[in-house]
Amino acid sequence: MMHELSALFEAVTLVAVVAILVTDLVLVRSRPHVPSTRECLAWIGVYVALALVFCGALAVVGGGAPATEFLAGWLTEYSLSLDNLFVFVLIMTRFAVPKEQQQRVLMVGIILALLFRGVFILAGAAVIERFTWVFYLFGAFLVYTAVQLARGHDEDEEYHDNVVVRAAGRVLPMSPAYDGGKVRTVVHGRRVFTPLLIVFVAIGTTDVLFAFDSIPAIFGLTQDPFLVFTANVFALMGLRQLYFLLGGLIDTLKYLPIGLSAVLAFIGVDLVLEALATNSLPFINGGEPVGVPTVPIWFSLAFIVLALGTATVASLVATRRADRRADRVGPRG
Image 1 (tube, rainbow, N blue to C red):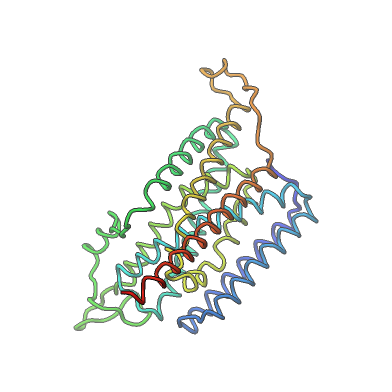
Image 2: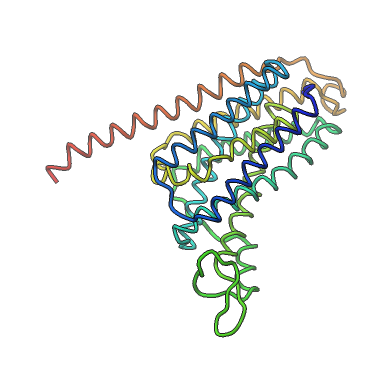
């Protein structure tokens, strides 16, 4: 559903978020370092507060509907970002990225993610406006993704170079080592690329794959391109600090993939119901809409909060119990 938000409000919002991201990028470039836990918590708190303030502004300017849709979309995209972080950790490990350069790599990854998702959002909005039956495809894809996520996350995962990364490594002249934050350097009088370029390629291609999951999910909660984009932007803000804060905690949240899979499956089913309610395919009900119930956005928000909250609490409880068992066994070992 499209909402009547003023063009001025949307323009000011977009200028503000771009300014925040540019400022973040300048800070990273001017002072590459490994942020402390205190610094990470402070920045994450700032970005979460900004998202909630924006949600409140939406409620004032546009009413409760767009604010609720944004909040549901932001929570979903923020949770999906944790899977981005897991793969980012694998990429950083695979290419042995120096710790002081990891902030820069993450910031480039976030900017690339925004660019790719912006393109996907524009394309998705155009397709949905003309062909509402695409919700059938989005819904089926999300249910499939949910099943794969629930089944596959218990296995040991490794990062495997994709076709683009392998081709870049073979074709481009590469140096054997990093040279600070440089993408190009000179080795034996010859200009070559550093491994940092391959890391950027790996991060960028991974972002494209993640967009295939996140964009259908957010369109299942709102079809307003402005809300879709801002939910993605605010979800990606603070991702860099979250990477350094979580570290090994990503593995601690062992049940979060189950919660995420439940959310994706729920949104997938919701999309199929939406497709049936606006059906125009001639081989389904003679091309007429099917009288099925649709899920109100407040119920979607409640389900997302319940599923993710339950998965997080269950993960923390399981981790605490495992630590207690280890403490009891430790002295005897």
